[in-house]
Image (cartoon, rainbow, N blue to C red; front, side, top):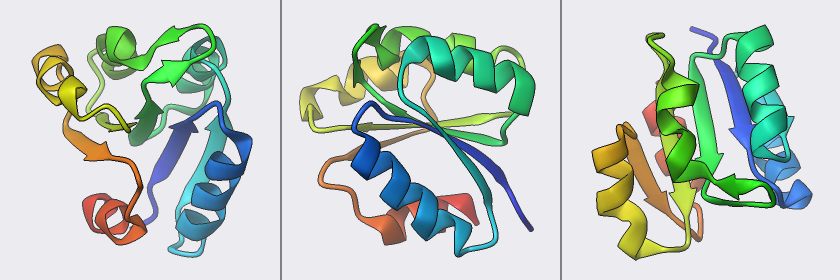
Length: 112
């Protein structure tokens, strides 16, 4: 089943590579490069899953997890190189926490 996925990642190369790989799995994938752009796209796209980086130019992704869930049956997967952020992200309501470097197979399995 196709999922709508929003990737919020400020490193454009990473975002576009993830987008290309996940589209190949029959997902509809959009990119946002900041928290503000991500908030706008969550409202308009209503994605099933948000892949969220933590260190973004306009804030910390972990502080916006509830805003991206916003009462919807939406999964939020946090992606970060900061392994010490895992506990805070889980307390904030993230569904899964993936440490960088990213293993695309892990993400593909979570989207199934």
